[in-house]
Image (cartoon, rainbow, N blue to C red; front, side, top):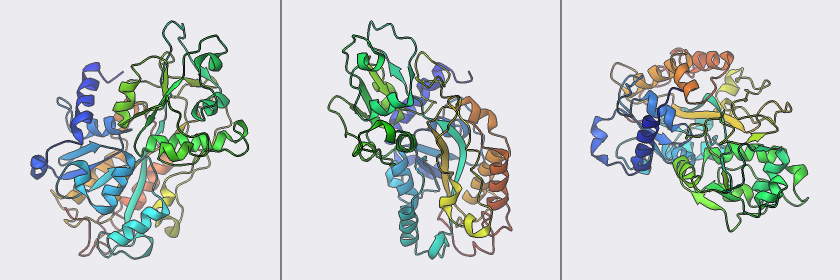
Length: 398
């Protein structure tokens, strides 16, 4: 495994303090962003933010892990203060996909025309960068002897709906230790990825009047499926959830990069025998094929499909990032626009594949990498970043 314990400890320290970062360093930063904590370890590695790990990108990048909802909002409204910083927001990470209302908010905030066509900031770009699982870490009750947890889809549904409340009921034993579910307190892309699975798979396992709601808010997700139980524990960010799992008798949901490797059956649950490294990109998910479809940022995040093959782990989704087609300083040497293009070029030409895989993510299919490169990284394309015919006097401020 590429990551050392020391690196993880250093990363956790950065995550814990990132949102409180002082703003005096802003003048030294070229490209500012933040949002999701799910993929923060990957971003920290690529941007060389961790001491001793060299930057793999052009320019100086910062990333503040807060949550997907805040990341989207900060990008849409250009509020760097959401990250504890001054200046402008140039990109965001969010596994919580954009909604139609997000597009309306963006166009309203920046006086843009319909479909994200910019008269100010330019088009909004949402693109996937990798595939991720959502692991279910567990800490068995003391003295239980549990060294491996293999859940059925029905059992997962019953845990998150509060129908199964003790470890004994879950495992058909005499253990009356309550199951304490640790959940993300704030809007979270990890929650949204989990909600896709629960909404798609749990209908047959809930009372007729109950269902899970697809949402990046845990409270909303379970609002019609029993609600939040009194012994469940809220935690902030991936680090907070990871830390909360140090107490026995708990189960949670988390990105695979936070000390719970998807191949570790002693720490993460299987579902129908499959560990979280057994994920695949939906075979029917294809990149938008025509100009009209490509113009809509919502079409660049594939819809969730429930795997019917039990050998495929069913809680998964894409890691997404938000950018603009136009940056006010253009794409010349030393600009934000040039740094963004360099990062995305390396992301989709395979340069970062080793880092993607060592952080337990799965790289995109070749056809998606090719489509994104063709559409967004070809300067003459109508959606190409920095297209001088489109980005003529407009763009996200640097």
